[in-house]
Image (cartoon, rainbow, N blue to C red; front, side, top):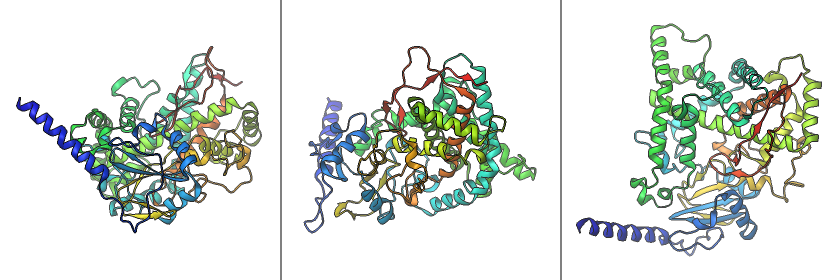
Length: 494
């Protein structure tokens, strides 16, 4: 009987709190209104309006309500920008006021202080965050550092090519091969070591499985995010999934960090070159911070690059003339007897245009990484309240007929001879974001994608397995992936 009374009391108090949060703090009459949007239902708000592909549903809302809309997801206010003008105000004009992050409840693992140890998810632009960004800019992703690391990345791509040659006549998942390649690229620039094999033989305890569990858990709609009063319950078990996977992943490089500290303490260099771990240690970072930064780099670098290459291959194979042109460029400008390097691949304008066109149609993060309003401000004549979540729908912007001619067609030619780039200056094309929260790994990501894609196209023909069809259905998550993995039978070129 007591347990029943406690349950009833908890339900009543929870419902009262949710209703209070939902209707609390109406905007003062003197303040401009929230952006328009679909009418929310009581308590649940617009949760039932979103569906499985929110980037598409929100693009639809913008056609009805305008380029800046607001929604209510449980107790959370969400503002979505779907035009270059709206994106400009959020990412440039109000960049400082809207530069916060909301840490998802699934990622709130015990003892992880995001203010102190995160580049991507730091709730505010703290001194630690500024220090990490400066470290990325000057030591990790500077032109000199990237050039120094290029030999290691080129070696990993050669190993990928040899692995695919060994799979001649067998069905492969392109995404899995690219994922392993990128993880080992990153593993070598961080630790000077490979972090996984091609088959992910460790199964559920392998790095690919652990990262997938973390990403999928963090991307799953979480009732604890919509109603924070329920966070302590972890009702869907998502925080537990992330915590377990993260701890198991850290074991994979725990001894590497320990051995490197001991080597540095003894004065004996552990490697013949300076890698990311050396940079982390020389900047006085503790093991916990190094582990979390490593995980952020691996997640951000692997899934986005894998998704972009997989989408690029899909689009090229759906467009025979484009595929023919890019292969001709490779043969003419590089030749069949010259090794592919990041340097010579970067000089291929049509290949680069194909990558840009892929990023326009299939941006890895369709909403970028969500922002949070640090203070109440105005955007396009509407009020953005403090702590609102702010999304920029770059997927919708990249497909807007008012910004792009024939926007749903794959036409790399639109980028030839154009100054349009993805470095945060052109707000109609923002696959990596803009402003102070722009992706710090952009220069590295660009090189990885171009080298991997060029190598796949140069060394192999790609017939489909019997009965397999190319499709472009999407699976929404932190990274926008193909709903069905891309399957091919690699056929080495003579």
